[in-house]
Length: 253
Image (cartoon, rainbow, N blue to C red; front, side, top):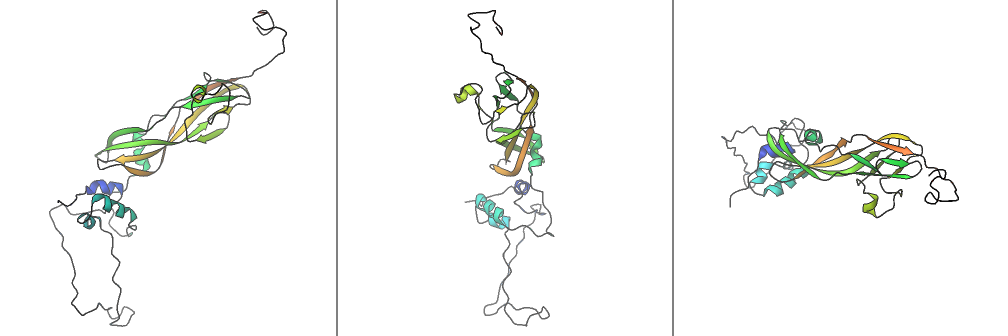
């Protein structure tokens, strides 16, 4: 069976492979041999007694060496657990960050208030926005890439200084089986009449794929939704002797 291969450039972008200067035309061979019956000793002048035993230096994780003996997935997992590189180690291609994926961000989502972007002061106005998992494709650092965004949180701004954060974009009263002007997880009751500019910011988690499988990226990407005007009116009641059907000319009819 052929030894597993690794696209080192891709893994460097993911932050898991060390940089390499070898262009593929050289093969490096290294090793060491201890003569039977002899033990390593400290050199004179290093602050210890000559002839005392020394502990072998700790083995450092090497991704390329791992690939010659293990599968790509095994080595990838070991690379994740490997300790950080020394500060003086030659830098490789920097890992991808959430900021690098801003160019692939989903379009901002619109917000709608029920019913018909109007409401009554003191009673719940229900807010709904639509967002779902989306996948964008393009190029990053000169390589084809797929980026998958999944909504993780919704920040509702109601325009009167009130905000709320939920894990859902909300549902209509009809979808919830509720009557109008009843509270929902995304509703808000305005205290005064007026016109308010409400909007919703959606936070996304991201995963990327260079053709070797999906890998999560640390952090969140936020899209700012456009403002939606919400008109809030006052409702007044009156005690009357007849309905408007009975007396169409009655006050308020």
